[in-house]
Image (cartoon, rainbow, N blue to C red; front, side, top):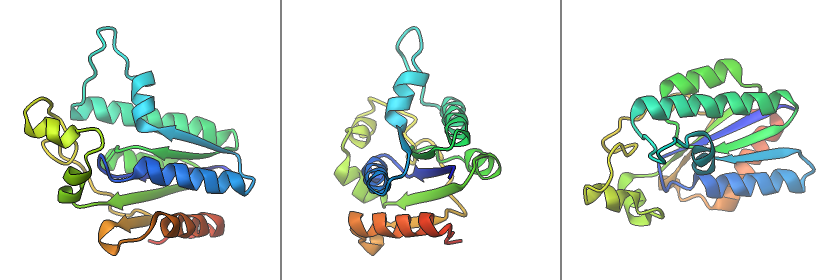
Length: 178
């Protein structure tokens, strides 16, 4: 069964953690799953000759479209593809819905104060010190998904295991929460 599970949220929201957990769960249940991580993909697909990556809106949008097209190619070969990526652009969400087989959008919604507290890659700290710019959700406008199939809201304090089970059940039953 071809399917693309697009897990999105801001930096530090827990996208990769959730993606890795759902991939393990699906594999443990005999599914052929490919896991794609946005940070790893950026290093592969966005490596300019001068080793300087651009993080402006246009560059991020173009890169997100590459992610989406890669997901489509893999899903068309019969795989379940789970991708963890910020890619919070309405253009991408719309394209995905029209073009990705079995598209299932998961939005992890975490307040900025909590993201700043977590800050696993020091992105928010580096932004505050003026070291970096074009940080999604800060000086770079993002589009929160309007019709995510599943919203995992930090305010609800769901455990990772509960989120994995909820997502797995929705995927297994082909249900959408919209």
